Length: 108
Image (spheres, one colour):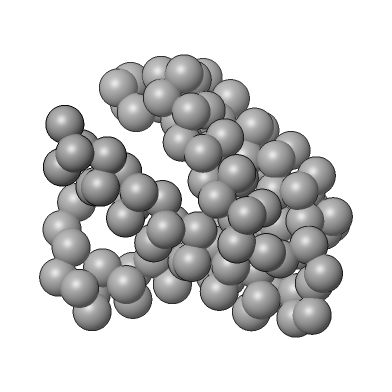
């Protein structure tokens, strides 16, 4: 049981750090870019990914569009950025996630 909790906490910490780096890259000196906010946003987006069924029915368009909408609303609301900045943040987040996976040898 402790292994699951430890794995969850490590995944949450890494996700939060990647999100913080991406936000700092797109909107430098954003006062809302904190570890606590990044952890909360990561938890909300993780729940949305599972509840929207995008994780299980990735080949269907509606769950993916629903998750994209939730992602945009959560990111723009949490970090007070425009939609254009949120899209740039999505690109930065993808790139930083790719770098982390490359450095640590994580395969999806």
